[in-house]
Image (cartoon, rainbow, N blue to C red):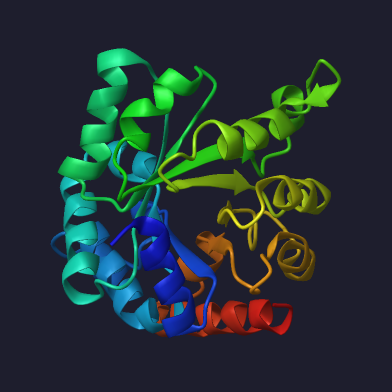
Length: 270
């Protein structure tokens, strides 16, 4: 099954556009987990078990694992999701961007080593840097377009022949890069006006929407500006607000409650 097909199925099965970001910081894991074996994996496992029926995706951020030499925990986390919750896709948030053999190896890393269903990539180096990912027809290729951080304006708002760069990226994604129907775009909830513009450009293409929760994005504006004609079309990510909703032995229950609250809030505006 192709990534977008899997995504569409889980949107409907779980009635959810929520993606839980597994940005697992060893320093923030509750002590009773941190002091045991494989604390990162076991923390993730508890969060996954508590939320799997409420989400449309999980999104581990690669840096949290690489910085702590915890790549094995990342592999185990993704394998666990595939084994016990195979309907829920996994997005590896790696933001890769390179050319030639290096790009091919990054694609192999994401899809063969980690078995991710989709990966985030940076298109700054152009279409040939995306080719090794795009050729994996069954995988999702999620291209940075209008990111959620304040500094996004420094580059993404630059004008080329009178057109802002993020709009050019969105247009190229639709016209040049989506031959296999496996392209998505990253558009931050912190920029609702731009989210609406990009939805108009990209039609029914799914959008990964970070910036809800700790970054302060507004749920109502994000959904009303980013939804597709079916009231779907979005993977709305929340990381810290969910996985660190609780600090003690009840952390997984708190994560479930926060995921449910966010799912229900999003569904009000679909």
